[in-house]
Image (cartoon, rainbow, N blue to C red; front, side, top):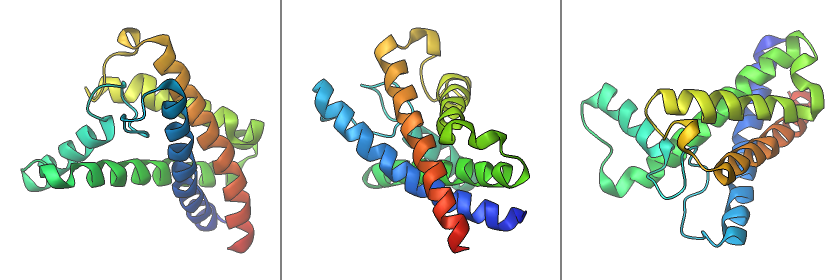
Length: 164
């Protein structure tokens, strides 16, 4: 057991899983005819992405100013990857301690992240509509996206853990 290696492997895997999750979301949105929407937003379709709202909140707390218009999309992407890496790092540490978090090859963890982040935390922070005001199709999109994240997270964590 090496918690630092677990953290590092998990964070790297989380960033990789975030990338795969975005590719999945792009395909989902294309299939649904919403190609103009932004994937990876953790918010309701048709609204400003929660990742951009979160980046704005961080920028205001640190600098006192909002993210400039020309940098908003990039800031949202950075927030998405930072969140994915952070959640992945936690997963990597937990996987070092006990095998429970890796149950279902990461899919259970991905579902827990969807519930904890998309359904509870993001609305509680005012970054998206409350879960009760989101259509079922958005819940399915969020869950499917995070199942992909979780499965990719576990696969990539195993690879990075061996390499470290």
